[in-house]
Length: 367
Image 1 (cartoon, rainbow, N blue to C red):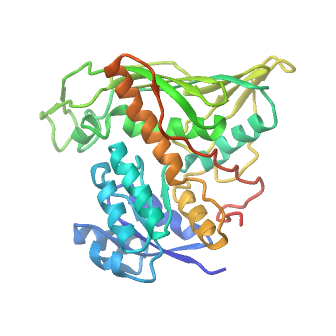
Image 2: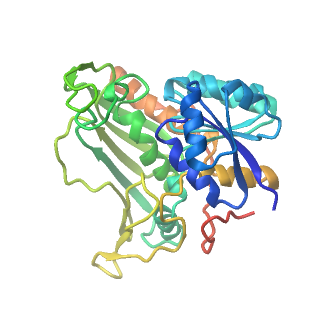
């Protein structure tokens, strides 16, 4: 099997898992990494055995690199994606696809014009835990899905993260930072969303940093930090999503899907494994379900490998741009609905991504 060469732009903290896991997929090869800070690019290349550390311009000009993996900060996702697309390369971006809808549409339209593909994290919905949930739903284990609930509740990053200011600016906050994991998982289970409404607020306008090295500095909060959203899915199910950096502690389940014949408890959508728990009318007690799929450890880069395989075979890839744009549209619409005080009909939709087949060994991708 020929291996698709990929190049990584952005050598910050998240790059480590992509550089490491890239060695574990049989159909891709990390050929180079780049960063605006060349010392950081050289350091990551040396640490993970990557052949070349390049400037961004050099990486984009390399004809051997077919997919650019964009691990830059969200506010420049669109800028880097568009540069890669102009260079004739397919792109796979960390979440979110972009900060604004308009940027997301530009990316999709530019890729269509150039005949290249767009992919986007998260790919955790392809992990063994959530794929097991997908199979249970498809097999009718809980009957017809009626509703879903999801909650990501914590008190933010200022007491532990070395540089937490970003998390309180537009393009981040709990919704844009963590919402893509929950929304992508729900859409992969239930299909696209038809309309939403929501409420959003800022509880603490300033945040005091108590982590190093910026201990004692104050963050001005410029994006909502507690958002509650309601979703009407096209299949008729109703979902709720709460994301918050304003909660000190909570015992809410991360994700549950309720059906006409039972309830499914989903694992953390920011992970690849379990546990998966099921309660049904036939077996009216909670039981843990054995996972049916592989990729249960941290397998970030799985979406890139799936995209590379799809480029060779011509099939759709799963963590695709249309899905990521639908997630972006949903998140922005929660905020718009809160401001307008009404439901928002989504202008976007997407195809429910195909399930992974059971039985794939780690490192393998279906044709």
